[in-house]
Length: 272
DNA sequence: ATGCCAGTCGTAGACTGA
Image 1 (cartoon, helix red, strand yellow):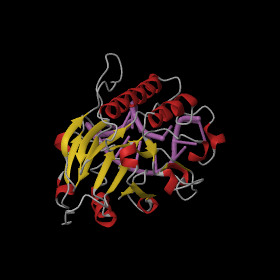
Image 2 (cartoon, protein in one colour; image 1 turned 180 degrees about the vertical axis):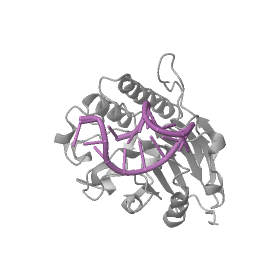
Image 3 (spheres, helix red, strand yellow; image 1 turned 90 degrees about the horizontal axis):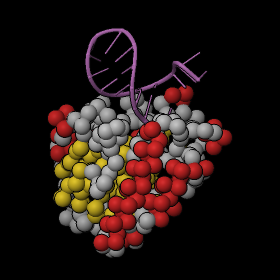
Image 4 (cartoon, chains in turn cyan, orange; image 1 turned 90 degrees about the vertical axis):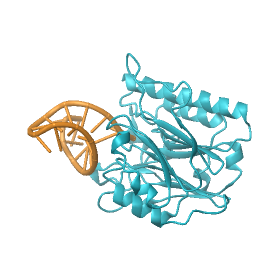
């Protein structure tokens, strides 16, 4: 049983695409004990509410909120510094298809004074696929929601955490030449990502984890991890009020190693 | 690149992922 912290200073916030919370439950529990994070935003839980293994988190002293509608997507936040005012989805979050169907891609909560969002941005699939337009629309609505939150409270401490499925710069992939015509690196996707940043949400991890060759995701196929063929697509974007508290950040490559790893590594932010 | 690897459904093979 972890001891809840008495102070809200020296908080660690992480984001991690776990690629199934059920298949990964033992590794997640071991990682929580090892990493000593206070808040973790998870994506791709891949389960419904009634299937979510809440005890994995509560047994370690965390509160947990989950949003899952099917075996796809699914987002959660676990916290041991409070978990209040849980919000499922953000205002005007787009749905997918005709008619538009809501997907479990966003959950927010107030954790120790920080508004934490766990976000799973749509993949896009192919550049000419309807899912690609959905991805761009989703990012644009996230930008609009974020801008509105900062307009209402410029000093708000907001963390947009998640798998953005965008590699914003060429050195965020192992070889940009290999991505000709591929999603994740196109100008519209990068513009949509930068628009979120420009709305006031800075990538506060990169200054502490400079590249090139620094990634958060490695495909299971083709020995991508040992070959260091990765992508940097998981981010913690911080509002000005939160960015001012950032003292450090790291990507936990160790967690990508061994049997039963997620294809994404956790990304951890250290706050004063 | 038709696959590669992994997880979901369910119990074969389709779908999703990036």
